[in-house]
Image (cartoon, rainbow, N blue to C red):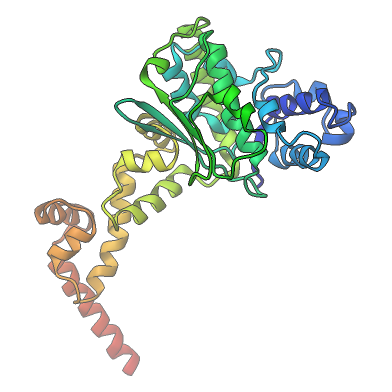
Length: 346
């Protein structure tokens, strides 16, 4: 199934491009939806429609800085569920966590990772648009983050530094107007660094009651939003299987790779009637069988390969899975293999 974006995000982009004279005012002919339909904040639309608008914006070519123009404008009449959640958060730090945890509400192709440090945090953007990442889309994402932070805190928010994964454009002065002096190009990925004092700035429209109500709504409806993606269970299982090779497979590491907090990961797994420990055990059980089929691995090596800190922990876990010791299991596997071989010869 195709990835989706919120109707509010699509309509917001359309409105700016229409205002700038890039797209026509016949919205239904262009997007296949009427304005009345797109005003429904619960509506999900194909992300390809947003791609179509960006194609038109870049084909126009008159405004190469269109990404910055779009990201620097906030239409207060077009506020989706995610925007409402940010508006009612306590401070910029909480708003940032809510944004990262629930960004799929806005667009399933927007992938943001939050890295925390003593001095503050870093937002890393790694989007997965069907046609790849455009400069205009990166410009829009990062400038929108700063514009929203300034609007929410009613103060000018400037990042410690900001990075872009492409060469410096001709209109670099517009970057400095939005992001300040510490703008870096030719970076490995797009990022924004924000200091702790900025993150602690309160949001004047904060309302804990409304925020909690919105979080409840999101929890009840996120399954529908994520129906185009594989289940979280399968994603976590894959990440554990990959991470166990290098020892980076705990719930925090997996949550970071999924662009969510550890608490959100545990909550969403519970919604799928599972938990991290159960999935980890599932991965280990599948791997251990392959190890035991062969005599090439001693049990201490298997224990280490499965991420157990002590061999004794491996033995206890194995007995709880198969109701026998690893050695007994290997002996049974050999007997079955021998019986099968004799049967084939007969």
